[in-house]
Image 1 (cartoon, one colour):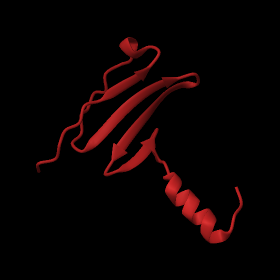
Image 2 (cartoon, helix red, strand yellow):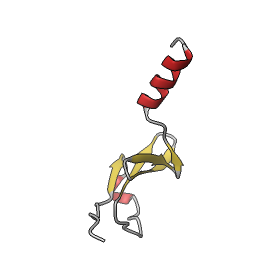
Image 3 (cartoon, rainbow, N blue to C red):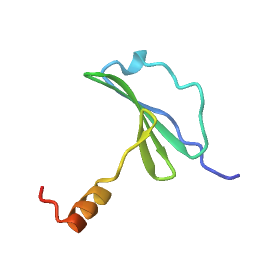
Image 4 (cartoon, rainbow, N blue to C red):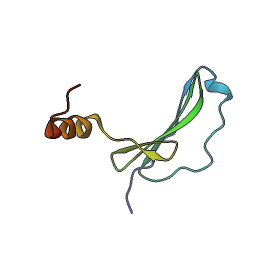
Length: 73
């Protein structure tokens, strides 16, 4: 398999104190974000975003679905 191995990126206030992620996976980009409510893991797998293991719906899908149903924003 010739998949690109992507580096892990750490963002936030305490960047230097954040632990290194133990595994590097081919084709998965990982970000650790330290926010006001604690740390979260953001992963991009095959073009899909996941936050703390749960898939994030793209805004384009949300907008197209609300347009189809006639929902007002």
